[in-house]
Length: 300
Ligand SMILES: [Zn+2]
Image (spheres, helix red, strand yellow):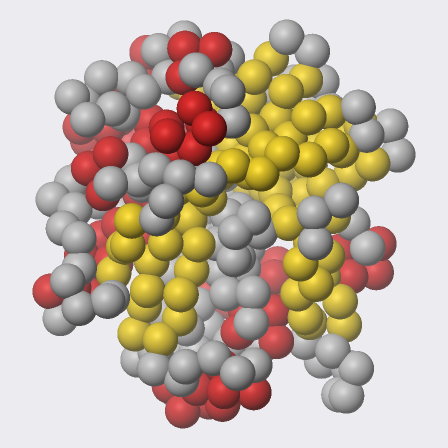
């Protein structure tokens, strides 16, 4: 139970008192890794941070259908039925003179490997000009601070939606982080570009101001879906099941189904922070009953 609470605290609001699990569940350290690829003329790099192993106990996945139903979906994909393993990754985009990091991982308090992965990619934290945030759960903003509590990316502007910043400031567990980053935060309204080729897209339901990021170069497009979907298996096969981390579960389902349908139709490239590293690929339709989607991993 303690482990579950620690895991929920990390993926939920709090980023303090992060304890590494000892029984194979909860946040797990990973070896640093980076994977570069091109999107049109842009250079993108996926950066590995950590992974988290959750019990299949209907507290996060399949809250409305139960663990047995979730287990069936996992089993059909050849995976263990008792757990769900999620990656925690971030994406780096170089556009013009900007070096833009999309999300920041768990951070050093949880042994996140992001800074080491960044070094692996040949990027110094001081050279990051913008850290753009999909939402303010701990596995996306924990890495904004270094181990000493200072800014991990000292020269970067931190960008998030106005709604998300307002919500973050209302969360007691985020008070220390809010104080540390406040002077660097600039907010936006989704739908307008924040850098050449980078536009935040509202993906409602997960948190009050959750966004994805559309990256465009010429005719090439990629959507960083943030936490629209967490499991490349369960969230895609059954997007209509309640996700315990969504603040508005009903809205989360509607957004998840509509966005996955659009991505499958357009065959747009996708990056997911929580799908197996490097989390880049396409969404497909599941043929048999026409309901639900599949993940087709592959870096261009
Ligand atoms: Zn997340």
